[in-house]
Image (cartoon, rainbow, N blue to C red; front, side, top):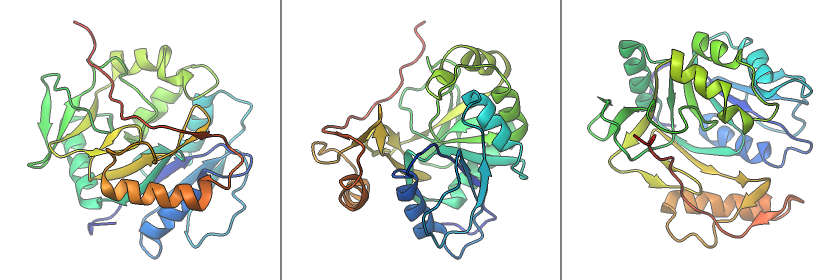
Length: 265
């Protein structure tokens, strides 16, 4: 972790029977934040039962209720007014606290409800500079105004969004009512960097560096993707050989980087 300001909490949503994904996330969170003031919340359907040196606050939810209701139940337990919400699937390997704070400052200045932390390239014409390298783009013209990728949320805004009825699973929440609510009622932006990093599923910035571990229920392999950023490839290779190969979860043979397009005119 880089930076010296008071950190915004990171909330990790998990759903697991044997924690094969969360164990990887917890390893890297411990590597980044052990002995720091970083606050971590873990939202999970059953208590995490593997040893870790990381201090975190666990919030249990009922897996029988809708996905949005699970999230709502958990974020209502968060005591801070702003937080990062991520899924265990997006393994955090580098974190720049100062850059995250600069993004949060821009959110306050511009009354932004949320900011997605995976990079987008296309400029929709509404740009807010953060640093010489990093900007925020208005996401209203993208097809997916909302996605389940890592995102900074104003708590009050998140409560309103996740109070919106949606299908039971998290992928369903990327469609229908949640999209409509944000598009009609909130200001949402996405990060853009002049020097993005190629990760396993999405392009990322140095503010919040992740690799996507699972797609469609399968672990993703680094082996056939030669375009990964060297730091990401090194950590993904380590995670793959240390945890993923030993898991009963099926493996994917190939990765791809993906970005969502702009909304058609």
